[in-house]
Image (cartoon, rainbow, N blue to C red):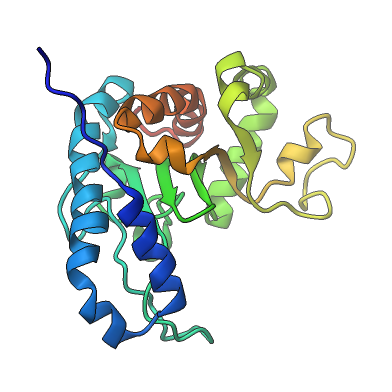
Length: 244
């Protein structure tokens, strides 16, 4: 008889994150670091390891890096140097399955090309009490990258419409991210794809319930969504002439 699947995350995971939101200070975190290690960090790394092989069936370019530092799991520590919010810790779990072309420098919903890094699409998982979701695409691309995406959309309108209206995509995802209030400079105000051309991010997201996250079949749940996201990632790679 096959061994029953064990959940990656438990009620203790969300209990820790809720408590951290109330006690976002170093002394409290140090006193509860064992709970963080077990219910957040190790649980996340196990999920990342178990997603590596399934993700390769979507694309060998998607990286699930289970290193505790410098891999797919975001650091819990916030960079407060340039922020008015000096709370030292993030109160959510962030995991990025990034494109190999980013050379391990991609984070969030995009591989930002600042400092010579390459804009490339990613898959993202966000776990937060009452705010879990998965998504993918390119978030906050540099201006030259965004122009390439807009021009590719204009030159290939059918492929764009096909992917965004695909049954599997619409079942799980909605296009999201920031948009301009006016037409982008250099693009016709009456273009039939104007609302999409106004996008500053080419991303889509899909809500997850805490029940989804706590279930032992979380990998299967995520893979259904990731497969539905595949056409968008492939389209972005074609636009940027990146192998997918």
